[in-house]
Length: 96
Image: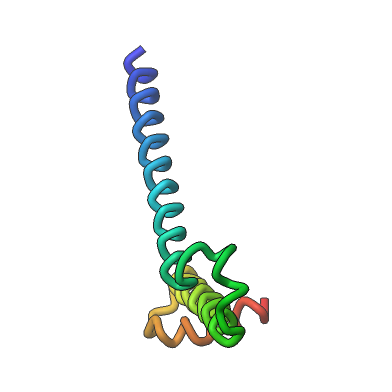
């Protein structure tokens, strides 16, 4: 019975911490969207210049790919600079 109490307790802790992390991520991403697109994106994107919307979107994709590349580099145990893997990590994924 003691094991079930521990299991229940840690299940509740894991659920609460996961819920808080997801809620924080949602609020953070909404905040970034409002900051980068100067208000509600559904209303402001048609009014913004094309180059600005393209720059924000493209730079977000590049930052994401660089983050994945750094994680892939460390995941395979390569001990090199993280910026090196940020640059070549996505290329490494394409060669797999």
